[in-house]
Image (cartoon, rainbow, N blue to C red):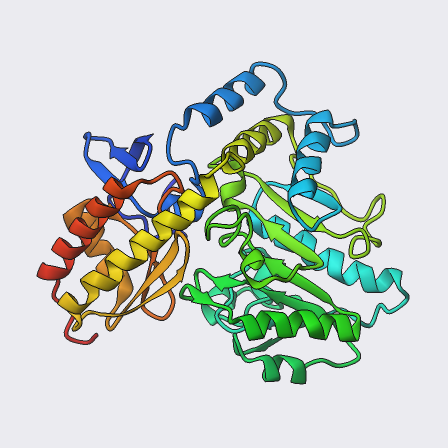
Length: 396
């Protein structure tokens, strides 16, 4: 039996990037792709952003890693900046979104343990959610494609329909620790939570002493035009997972929490060898510097509005193919009436346009946050050209 050097868990396509410039990826033979995938919402500042490149290079020449057994002036400084910009009182740094969600789950459970209610360990989560690929995070979703063959899974999760507040409230019992929810489901189809739903979950947590845990790994960090997506709803979580855009391409994540929610996370309860290393902190500081510049988030909002308007203007020309536009800011989804994965491959292979497939036959549109109107015009032209010649499969 033969196997590839890279474990064959990805259906890798023929795009083989070796270089990036802003909103563009360049392949081995010099071919250029307009990157409206951004490493699945990771490359918030595009490719090769000079401030991020310099910060990483300077820090790499100074100090890359030390153990968390020692003090971390770099981590303390970056954590304080996140605290000052958010609801949180404390931060744990990780290397990925899945690790950030794992920390969030542990923090929620440990809160009730610290209060003498260790039976309150169940988190209510939602259909079509995606929280990561660890055993804990696949246990938090009821999608068979994530779970099959990996049992026994971690107990302590209940599932119900996204945006169904009554169904969620009906699941609360004496074992409930809280809710784990994405304000916008990315992999699940760019489904946006309704204000009534998120506000209702927040009220239920307040009424029952539960933890509201938000997974903002994809929707957060400027992607929707606010620093975090929950700001659109006028609520705050108790615990939140962030990653993807936070490092602009450097592997970095964070679990943020209030002092009350983190009361059980004391010495010895959690850890990470690489989490919060000086190199990651330098990358995080550089990205946050750019996001917090005057007008940056307003620019994301303006580009998101322009992108949505352009998509909605284009859609009637291809009403046999497209159904609706979803999302907020530059986290956009285009729902198809046929297989979105096949259409994503068509755009990539024939029109030099990179997007990402999602559930419910949705094409995720996740450009770098630094795009301008010329990039949107180019995107719409390539998308229209692709739609004009695309023939859905006979079984779609």
